[in-house]
Length: 219
Ligand code: AMP
Image (tube, rainbow, N blue to C red):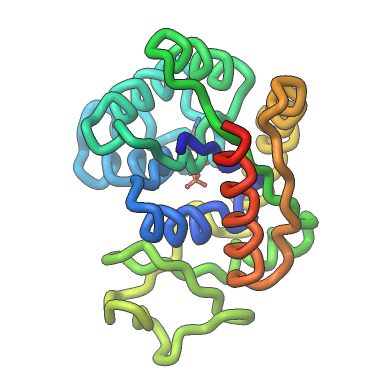
């Protein structure tokens, strides 16, 4: 199953992608994670991307399209994947479609997570992420059992550099201006499904399973 997750930063894409990937044994392809790892390791991609990440702006399309082309060409993506954070512009969405059409493996579904902006700001500024397994917590709404420690693996929790209020607001603005129009693109292609991202993690998980069952039955 080839799946795209859409929705503003903080809508829960990463959390749901991680759970779905584990359950279905397909990789979660998070372009944000790929870029943060590149920045950490100081690779040429990381050096080029760092300024954009720090400012909450989008990394240029040409660079991102290359990143995704390389990643979905890997062996572990042969049976499917969940794209979490890509595409983020219409140009990326079109390039992805072309890429997939050329190998005869089109996208199965694009799932858009809806969450009001106020809630997104609250989620992102309180977010803490596990350095080891990537699990997300929230200091207000979903705190870990022990402060600063991951419930799942005992790893250290940290606050992403771009989860401060200024950069978070910028990322929301960028989302509305550059990413939100993609929803319409996928609607017109008949692959869009929409979910209410304000509900509990398990409820959303169950709805995603229903959506995927419907999509595979229609295949
Ligand atoms: P995320 O972890 O998905 O919130 O992404 C963090 C940051 O990485 C974004 O604010 C962008 O600077 C960059 N980024 C991630 N994915 C993309 C993409 N598909 N296109 C451009 N920039 C991206």
